[in-house]
Image (cartoon, rainbow, N blue to C red; front, top):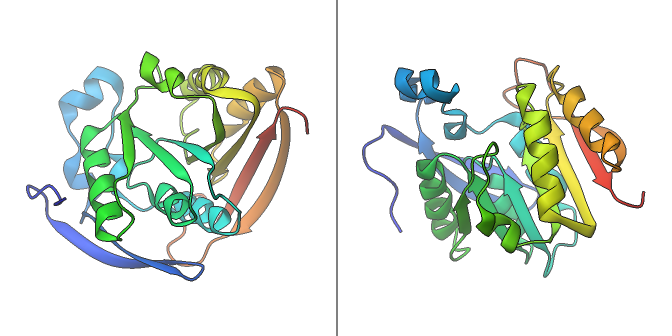
Length: 220
């Protein structure tokens, strides 16, 4: 599988625990901004960058026993956490509302020798029935997915449809103000919440180097 060629591409090494991947992505995400797409639904090409929350989430997954687990990644972008899940023996379904993001995700998985990454185009405001038909999942993950307040209700509904009684959630967030709305929505829906902190090295998010790991379970 090849990468889309109509981009200025850069390939960089990313090391997570003992695993190292060569991740190919567009060189500058801001060059991909489409004013028409933004006017339609405030869509911005966040997928094209490796965000600190994604690295923190991937690092956390690298420490877990994921063999045989069915994992759903939301807002996957370049899908580094899903690559870790594959490397740890899980079945990962990476989802994003940008089809081209999923092209890069599949190509990076193939380049890493991880085989075929399962992907699905998903708009949180109108998720496809196929997503829920594929569930329930053992673990649902997301990195920096609560960057707008409107996403709290959308994601809470999506979690309700994709989760089962034993599903857990793991959300990495760089302390964005609107993440509190998502936490409140999930707690209000009966999820038990625990929060841990991780400090990332390298390029920090504009919120700083501390990443919150939000863990949700049904039974605590």
